[in-house]
Amino acid sequence: MKELTAPTVCLSLEEIQHYAKDRLDEAARFRVENHLLDCALCRAALDAYMANPDETLGADLALLQQQIQKAVPPKKKQMQKIKFNYAAAAVILIIMTAAAVVYWQHTRYDRLYAAFFSAPKAGDVIALRSEQGTPGAAPTFDQAINYYDAGDFSAAIPYFDAYLKGHPDDFQAGLYAGIALLNGGDPEKAIEWLTTASINDPKLFDEANWYLALAFLKQKNPAEAVKILENLSQRAEPVFAGKAKALLERLE
Ligand SMILES: [Zn+2]
Image (cartoon, rainbow, N blue to C red; front, side, top):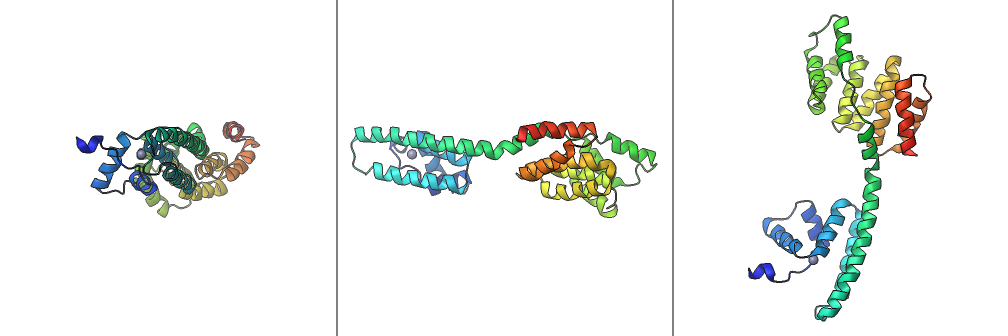
């Protein structure tokens, strides 16, 4: 019990960083967690760091650490220490507010993406294949569509890849592969397939461009997304033109 009640030294920036990235050994992690239990300041600093673990905030926290050391020389009286804690709490509040704003901005495009993305059902594609009289002719394609329709986009991707290697001019499959890649967390590769579909098949232009805009949004490239959406919103096709207008309004 003695260790639990003894005051422990505040966490260094390095400790906060390593703890946040789960890089501490067991003993070091125990010390950090033990200290976090009874130090609201370090908990706030950790929260602020985790909300925005980039260099700017790291520098802010390092500055705060210096201020802590300046403000609390080892043998100050209790009163002064309490006074300092208010000041430190105010500094942390400012840092956390700044971090929250940065975090909010940073995730804005992710939130817009989540609000606007929905994967089309692949039923149309399957119907098209049946018309062509080739169901089962491409097992990798069938498997890709099965996973796609079940919403398991990551599982669908390798089957799309395998199928498209043999059928690089199947732009509709390319479009759906692009949508699966977009939702499976690879917007860069999604952009390749969506661009290919958009350039090569006029029937796919609007849908492919809609998902292209979302892919750029996911890549935090709003300028490119806006360019595509502005073009799309002028098109005669009503569905994706309408979606494009709605998303443009949110991006302005
Ligand atoms: Zn502390």
